[in-house]
Length: 370
Image 1 (cartoon, rainbow, N blue to C red):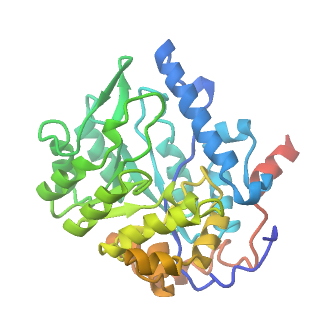
Image 2 (tube, rainbow, N blue to C red):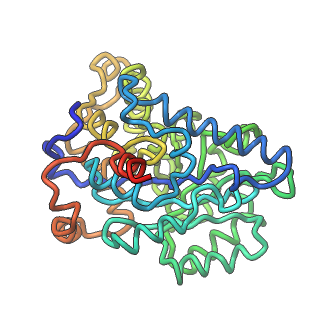
C-alpha cells in the first residue's frame, strides 16, 4: 500500500463511516476520584492499544503517537484522515455520554459540530444521551432543535457519583421516556454501544438482549447495535432476523479484517448476512480509533472463503452487497438522496483531490509547526 494513490477503484463507491469519534482522553479530562480515574486511565489505555496495535502489517504510519491520540478531539485531524486520506465521503460523528468518566463525555459533540460547520454535506451528528443527566429529556430537545442531530447515541453504563450504574433499553421507567421523546421529535436512529465493556466495569450491560424489547415497543424507531458481532454474535444475528428495525454498525468489528483474523470477520459478517442483514449493516471504522483507509480497502477486496460458504451457508459477498454496506444502507435509513449528495461533494476541496494524502498528514504537519 503506497502513501499516496488514486482513489480508484473506489472512486464511484459511496462510503459512509457510520461512527467516528474525536477522543479526549487527556488526564485533565478525567473525572476526579480514585476509582473514576482508574476506570478512565484503563479505558484510555485500552483505546490506544487498539489504535496502535490493530494496524496493517504493524506499519507505524497508520498510528498516532500516544500523546496525539489523547488529544484527538481535533476537527482538522479527523476531517483530513477521513476525507483527504481515505475514500470516505461522509461520516456520522458520535458524541459519547460517559460523563462520569470524562468531563466532556470522552468524544465531545463540539468536535462534530465544528466539522459539520466546515463541511455540512460531509458530516452528520448523533447526539449523546444519558438517563442519569437530570435534564435528559430537555437535552434531547436541544440536541434535535439546536444541534440538528440525525440520531441519538446511548451507552448502557456510566459512573454516577463514583458508582457503576447500568440500564436496559427495554426499561419502561428509565429508557422508554427517552425513546418516546426521540420519536415525538422525529428522530428515527437510536445507536446503542454494545459488545465492548468500557474499562473495569461489569460485562452484562453490554449484552444486546435489551434491544429486542425496545425494538418491539418502538417499531417505528431503528436501533443500531454499535460494535455488533464482536461479542454475542448469534443473538445479534437473530435479532436482525426477528426485527426489521434492528441494524448493526461495524465499528470495531471491521478491525477483524486484518490478516491475522480475516476468517473471524467472515464468521461475523456471514452470520449477519445469512439471517437477512444485507440491507441493515452499516460500515464504520471508529476513526480516530483506526485510520479508515486500510480497512475500507481490505473490505473492498474481502471475500468470504468458499469453505465457509459451503460449510455454514454464508452467501457470497458480491460487489452490490459491499456497496450497500459501505454507504447505501445507512443513507437509505437516513433518507438521503445519494446521487444529489455526491454531486455536491464532487465540487468541494476533498472532492477535487486526485489522490489520497499520506496517513495522519494533519498530525505530521502540526508536529512540524510545533
